Length: 349
Image 1 (cartoon, helix red, strand yellow):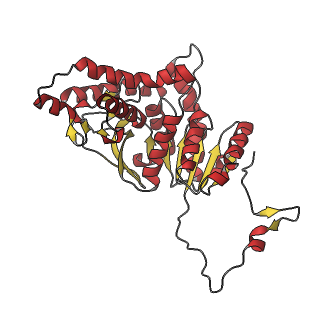
Image 2 (cartoon, rainbow, N blue to C red):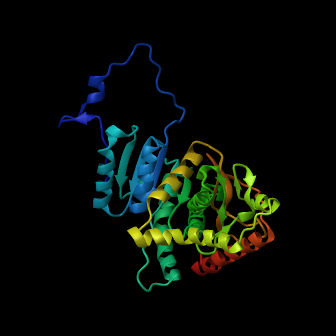
């Protein structure tokens, strides 16, 4: 399937309507050669990919949006469905193709494609199938957009971000996993709900694996600039560690609950990834917990990618925030890294 997009020609003669509709003004200079055009490509048009695409469009984050998938009919249907909303959205050119060459010149490539787990299939076998899939996806993206930043959303995101990094040959700052950005949003929501405040006033991070071995950084949580646990200690307000653990467990289990209820997750990850795209492409230099190369941080050995609070901007990962972890949190983070490495070493990449 070739790429498809709206054009400025009509009729069998290919009349250029632009020339007929508009007359140039006198003494006009040619357009600036400075690149101001932004292009985002989304690889995979499943529920997650389309939620991301839709959120990117409504938030006016790009001038050009490209959709890529192997299912030509669904791909064209999704493209047309978005194009038909043009009157209600900021002007964005939308293309779709099964050929990755359509992604050429992308500023950001968001990969959501991944193999679905078959009943009874081992996690390692699923990873091996995703490795084969990424071998077909990542090199062409790199070839067509050598200066792009890769944002990996496919699960298991930490290991597949590592795979993408190795296959791309990119420096580590230009390969990012969506990581625990969404987990941290769920965490902030639950804390805000307990305290009856706005989630935007809660500073809280989930780090480590995007999965069961993730780590809640209770020691650094603050609300409105007030460190929560130290405040409770100073005010001699008792709290139970079990309550904290239950909140973290709710974060870990929340995705499973959504999947049980509606069959998949989509909207929250759509907003989460669009939030990351905004920080990267608009050089916002915001802090997000995303999958980064963690070697050398907090005593972690080996080339493992997991979530740490990182500053994001036009150059991708600009740096990792020096967040203080207590001894228990540090040990849990190291254990989380070991969990990822144990699986990663079996891939042979």
